[in-house]
Structure formats: C-alpha cells, structure tokens
Amino acid sequence: MTIPAISIQALCKNYGPVQALKNINLKIAQGEFFGLLGPNGAGKSTLINTLAGLTRPTSGTLEVMSHNVISDYLAARAHLGVVPQEIVFDPFFSVREALVFQSGYYGLTTNDSWIDELLITLKLTEKANANMRALSGGMKRRVLIAQALVHKPPVVVLDEPTAGVDVELRKSLWRFVNALHNDGHTIVLTTHYLEEAEALCDRIAIIDHGELIALESKRELMRRGLGQKLKVSSNSPLPDVPANLQSKIVNLSSHQLELRLHREHDSVMNILDQLKAAGFQIDDLGVETDSLEDIFVQLTSEQAN
Amino acid sequence: MIGCYTLFRKEMARFGKVWFQTVLSPIVTAMLYLMIFSQILEGRIEVFEGVGYTEFLIPGLLMMTVIQNAFANSSSSLVQSKTLGNLIFILMAPISTLQIFLAYTAAAVARGLMVGLGVLLIGLFYVKVPVHNFGIILLFAICSSAVLGALGIIAGIWADKFDQMAAFQNFIIVPLSFLSGVFYSIHSLQGVWHTLSRFNPFLYMIDGFRYGFFGVSDVPLGTSLTVVFVSLIVLSAVSCWMIHTGYKLRQ
Image (cartoon, rainbow over all chains, first blue to last red; front, side):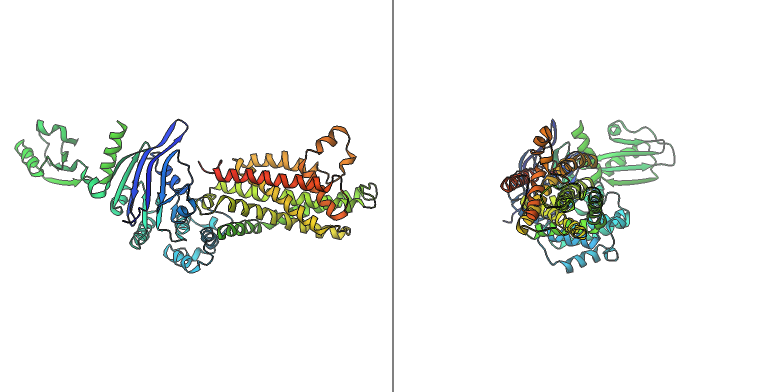
C-alpha cells in the first residue's frame, strides 16, 4: 500500500478563544487532484499554512509523504511546494535570481535547465532578467508557481492561485496544473471558482467554520445535490401551481416557473404532466443539473443554520 | 548546508544590490567623523601615551561602523522580508534553525568587515595605524559583528514595523556605540558615567579591538574577550530560540 501524499489527523488550531480548525481528519492519496473548498475565513489557508509550517497546530499531526511537518520538517518541506494566496516577492531580485535562490534553498546547486523549462511553460522567458517589481500581477503569480515547483515537489498545494487573474491566464494556469497532475504530482487546490474545482478535482473537501463538512469524491458530492432545476416558461400568463408542487418553487413570475426537483423522488416527465393537467401551456422548458456551487451553498448554509 | 549557503549568498546579493546605501554611505559617514574629530582634536588630546588622537580614533571608529552595519544588515533584511511577506520563501524551505541563524549572521559579519575595511583604507590616508596583534583585531571584528548580527536577528524578528526597528537602532544601538569609548578613553569619565560605561558591552568590543592595534587597553583583554564571547553565546541562543519556536514568524 502506498503512503498517502498528505495525512492530517485530529488537527486543531486555536487563535486564543477562536477555533480556526476543529478536529480535521484528512488523507490525500498520491496522484490525486484534490479540491479544498470553503467560504472566506473557513480555515482553508490556515490548514495549508499548518501543512507548510507557517502556522503551528494547537494539536494533531500532519504528514507530507509520511514526514511529520513538525518533527521531520526538513523532509516534509522538501516534498512540498506551496503557491501562496497572496502575491509576495523579493523586490531586490530578478525572476531568474529568485528562482535560482529558491532552488538553492531546496539544496539544488544546478537547476538551470528546469528553471528554463519553467520559464518557457509559464511564459516568463522574456521577463527572466526583469526585476520582480517590473512584473504585472499575473506574471508575479506565475513566478510564485515557478518558485513552488523549482524542486519538483511530489505534492503541490495551490492556495487560490487564480484569485484576481484574468480568464485567459486562468485557463493557461489550469492547463499547466493539469499537465503537472498528469506527470504524477499530487495537486491540492483551493479556489473560489467552484466550476474549476468541478472541472479539475477528483475529490473535494468542503471546510466551513474550521470544520470539515464534506469529504467525498466529486461524483458522490454531486449526487448529494437535490438534483435538478426545471424551468418552464409560457407566452400566456401561468395558472396556479398545483398544491403538491408549491414546496418545490424556486422562482415564480407571471410567465416563468422554476422548480427544484429531487434527483430520486421526482420525475421531470411526471411533473410536466401535472403542470399540463393544471392548465399550463408550456412554450419552452429547460432542465439544469445542480452544480457544485449549488451543493456548496446548500452545505455551507446548512452548517450556518 | 546548500540551503544555508544559498541564504547567505542571497543576503550578500541583497546588500550588494544597494551598496551605495549599505557600504559606501557608512564609509563616507565614518570619513566625515574622522575629518572633523582629527582636525579639531589632533595634538590637543593624548589618550594613550605616544598615540596621536587620530591614531586612537581610527580603530574605535572602524569598530563602531562594523558593529552598526552588522546590526543593520540582519535586522533590516528580516524586518523587510516580514513586512513584504517574502520571508515565507525561507520559512517554507527545508532550512534548519541553525542554518538560518548562520546565514543571516555570516552575511552581517561580511557586511561589517567590508565596511570596516573601507574605513580602514580611508583612515590610512590620514595616519599609519600600528598593528600590535592582527589575530586579536580579526577575532574582535568577527565576534563583535557576529554579536550584532545576532542582535539584529532578534530585533528584526521582534519589530513588527519599520519605526520599531528605527527606535531600536536610534535609542539602543547608536547611543551604546557612541558611548563606548570610540572618541575617548573611559578613564576620562568620572563617577556614575564611568560606572555606567562598564555595563555597555560595546565598550569591550571596541577596547579589545583597539588593543589589537596598540597593545594598550582601558579594560584587561581577558575581560573584553569574555564579555564578547558571553554576549555572542547568549544572543545566538536567543535568536536561535526565536527562529526555532517561530516567535513572531510562524503563527
């Protein structure tokens, strides 16, 4: 049996009376593309920072490739590459200098060919000798990704790497991250763009108020959704909605009705028959499957309640 | 040790990029002190028998510049890295506490010695300073700048913003270095001032360093060596503790 890329057991982190992380238990297998989702302030960055050694856990254990991040921190850090959420850089140095120093911190004296490859892949070659201050926000973000990858870590953590990044760059970053994943890297991603997690991740954890409220494969998580939304519209004013469908109404206007259907208990055809029987003249209809965002909102609002 | 050496090289490159401010500027300041004080006091004061005032002044001025710059190097680097957030590149890297300490301290020593060498070369234009024991000169220069490099690490980690660092520099480092016998012998001080001076560790650094030039000192050499070594051990231990526990570095 292979060792997990990341293993977190009974992790708690308190800031005074505030519990930022509450008994987190999590295992991420090698080669997984793992999504860590949660609203702002949920504890995602705290979790990543404890993994990276920037935050000390109050209790619990964390391991990267079976190396404890406290007692065996040198080995744990050597196996981990973290792209931080905030754009940080050293204003004294150029892009290449930053990458050469970063390589040295990880014990690599000669790393020029891999640095060149990273610069090409991340479209930074032309800026290799430019000072970090002269780069745009998107370029600085790409340098941060290159810095996290200089030592080819088996586990790569990206903490909201696309926050504030334009659509084109976001897409090229995802292509790059996908390629890394295909090369065998374990990827842990936090993002606010849920459609990205939906498109990229194999397994997803949702964290809210410091608690892990879901930890499932993407397919299982999607099945948790209530199912579908049925939208019907009519050119003529809609009659009264049958009483047994009232509880399913999401939106209702004079010409449009939107119903939420349970994936197991409701049949679209059956509902349409009921609407027709009630006098609905349906001119257009649409069925929308719940997205990860719907499930996310549902889970986090359940948690809030 | 590659991580440690890289961090040392990075620190050297950092101050090298702004050498006007970090190397040339303190040399010019020391030169101004030398010009003014030697013009005014040469021939009027004889601190050690047979030693002219400019001759007496040069080792003290040199050591003051060395220790001030050693402190400035590690402290400003750390407080800048903390403020700008780029310290995480070092905190997330597989570099041990001792390696981080050694890298910052060695870079502080290197800058101190570099600036000191510049001041010495300028001083030699004024007067030829004798060398009684080169080993003692080098020992005090290295150990004293290491003490201030370690103190700079402590201050850099402790300070949350630049004005706290400026306060540390202006209210502790500068007064202690000015009142350490750079410009005078502590035997010229009376009563309480003489007693207070004895509690100033910079006095021992400068006095021991000056012994290396003239073979004469205000305080016995053994006492100066002991104070410098004990300061080095204590401050190194404190700064290593701060790095190891992540005090103000890791949440």
